[in-house]
Length: 118
Image 1 (tube, rainbow, N blue to C red):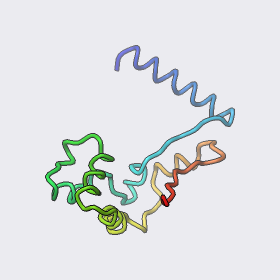
Image 2: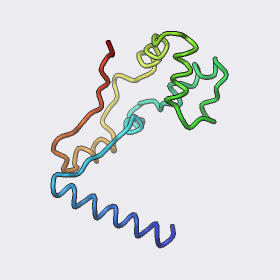
Image 3: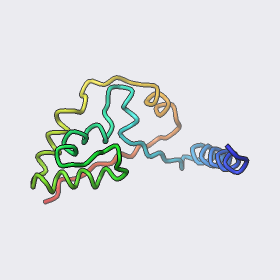
Image 4: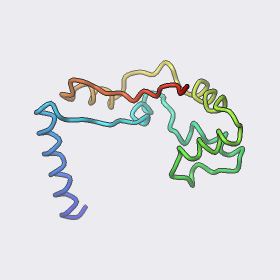
């Protein structure tokens, strides 16, 4: 790591700690946070269906677009819904990442919640 990167990292850490101490810190955490508890990555979730339509997820960076291709190919969101129901672990445990988050002084967690469109 070069000097500039170390300085940027140190500045980020200092700024984030100040924000946390002032109750202004925010954290955006994705699905990968739960992978150590048996969760599945988006690439693993989509892999088989993507392969069936000729897409290699290991060569893709935009998994949202891959999911859209799967949806377009099937003509229904049922395919994606079934992937989520069948492959997401329902009995995961607390992992190291969860414990770190739990101990951060973030008083009001925000979650992304997608509403069903009408």
